[in-house]
Length: 341
Image (tube, rainbow, N blue to C red; front, top):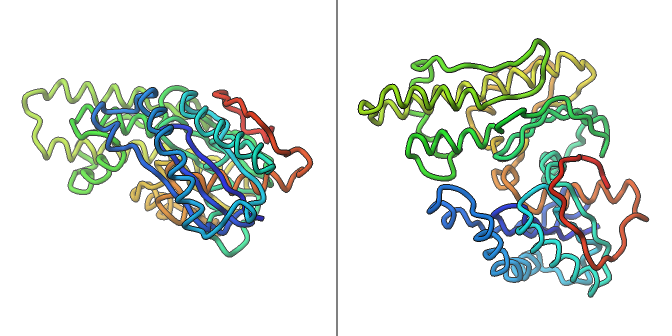
């Protein structure tokens, strides 16, 4: 079964064709990073206008790259939210029109569910349930127990800022530009991660929730305290210290959940921050004996992309194919719910 997916939840115009949930035939992305770097973050109105300009060229390129025509496509998938409403509308209206004209089933996929399925892309072996997934990005932070396809339980989530947002804000404080994650990670390579004793906020005993607002405040306080004496080594040491503080919290919460649910077979890392090399290293260094650890096989599957939406749509469709018909409209949703509805 070949599914063509469209992803426009934020600032990436993405289309992908995935066969049987795992085989990526093409994954086409038009990035807006250079545009939003000028303002230090995503401007929704600008992002929406760029989606209008890029949507059809990206769609055409996607079909060309996989040498498919519309007769080869069995169904369409679309990100239904959460995300920027103005951006979501461009993708959903495009998918709705194609669904109507080509008479193809349309499968709406929750954006975070797409990230949960990014570790299925390109694999050849079988993933063993139950799976514990740490998904971390600019707008979300969740620990999810996945007992089977579309059988999810959220064990923990962020109470304030997601880790990806914290990376962006600290990068801005240090004058490193946007996006902040790659900039912090690169600079941290030449820094001393022990120089600044930044807080590791674990919250209440046994809590699996996250909080990074206090860490951001601690960084800002140190920057203000050292104003006038901030050189490149200060920035590198701060980047390394901040990154390690975030990673220890993320990793320790993951391992805490693993101990709480001994039936877990695999640990997965997903979302934009899953591209962070140091986070992957930390998990591997502390991986419990017998546990299988996976992260997306390509960096392109970490950030927002349509392949993960097509993958999730395939397994969602298998649950109940009768639910998905050709449609004329899908209304974007900004609420967070990892149900299959």
